[in-house]
Image (cartoon, rainbow, N blue to C red):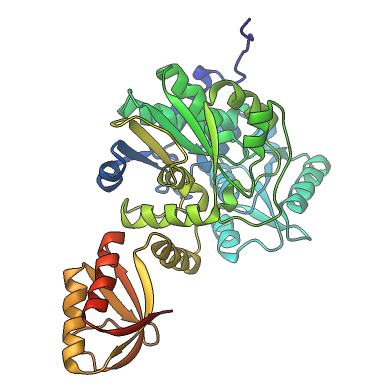
Length: 411
């Protein structure tokens, strides 16, 4: 006998959230981008559902705004509080400021200065926890809420937060109603719970697939065992926005009934996802936002030829220096970048080398001086970074160097 179940989040709750967004103007509709490169490579119609154009560069503003807007006037006067080191902090701060409500954001003592300043700029009163951990921030947040009477704004385990996140599905399926598969990152589960709630009403046949970091697979473990399990490897993940040890009670309830499958991705796969989004999708994504792309690139998800697949890009808050390093590492993992020591012993070798680069859609820069190698480059020995448009181009380039008897070695 099929289990009777009532979703704690109603489709009408999501419609109400969308109406709030339209009236306030604080939330922009999600951007649906068709990706030609990935579609051709994967033999499917690939769409990126992009939330990086929000004011806080993340979907988190949706849930935070809807949760705060749903408070009573008496609750709003008390002020709101949350614990977060990133996107939820900024979403809560800007939403509260928009409504003229005081917000208190408790952040770990090691929170990046850029995120602390961004939260302050959005009007949040930042309070640093005494220890460098989210647990410390969360404990202090709970303590202050109890002592001061502030109203807590949960990052995921709240029906209004979930309803706010679900508006993404309204907007995405409003543009492409016959999507076959929607792939969504999972941390605490608020985003996928909201998307699944709306999507399954609008298109009951759609597959909803979640993706977690292999370092924080608690929701997948809970999903597989059909009960909430707390777990983390203890190893940091690039997808820090999804580094959640314990699934939400409400989110897990929705996920176990509406989500079809959950897979995990490794750190190297996340790096490949970020690089692919940048070079092939022209989208800047943080680690969590790249996990759906990472999963499909790593063949973690089965699909039919020609399927219409939506890949959620949930946020783009990533440090510039980290992003640069990730892109370079990603190109190496994708086979599109090599580092070599090469002897361009005379002007003929320099000219031939640059010709081979051009023929194979590649460019080379000196690792020491960061200048491009051109036919004007002086002869000599160089440590180079070579980047090509594709893995096949790189294989051909290295083969051509060998055939033309260049003296080079991989670094």
